[in-house]
Length: 252
Image (cartoon, rainbow, N blue to C red; front, side, top):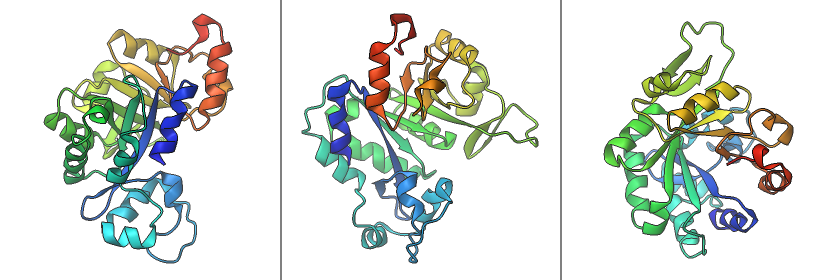
């Protein structure tokens, strides 16, 4: 899976994001939410609780996960597959850690250290501010990205809350981002439904790159062309649009 994704670099893709979840014994696996819609506990039926999937994985060991889903790669297997794939020195690996497990974070950092070229081009990202804070303490010089999800919830008394997974009612300015994250992150990744031009400007003026996710319809990029990065499931379509756009409309 990882190896196939890296091949998109030839089409102008600058990096790849991989979701990482941890088992009960803190072994990292490469797994996207959609993969986890099947019940890992045995009945094999599809479920809609995608956003809680890392909890299901965290309830079983790596050995049990292997038995139930032998098709899913561990992080180690992904790194082995990709290390000799010929990716350039500019290609970026973005590891989104979904499980709020400090031991898992330590295992991931130790594991990627075995692959110096990949390690030097890897950023850590998460919705879980505790994950970023723990990783930052271990490796302060690495690139870190805070992911923000928007929710329309009338019971929010502040503009943002942090309850393990950061949810924002109103996008904060840079001091609010630092309050959420516990430090000034290098990047913020914001859901396309809540991203605003003034937020992009404020972040960039303060040295924070802005990413929009997950953008699969190019029409949703209107007025947001100044983002630094785009996360998409359709990279070839987005790349085609950017190449045709006028210079002042292109994403960086």
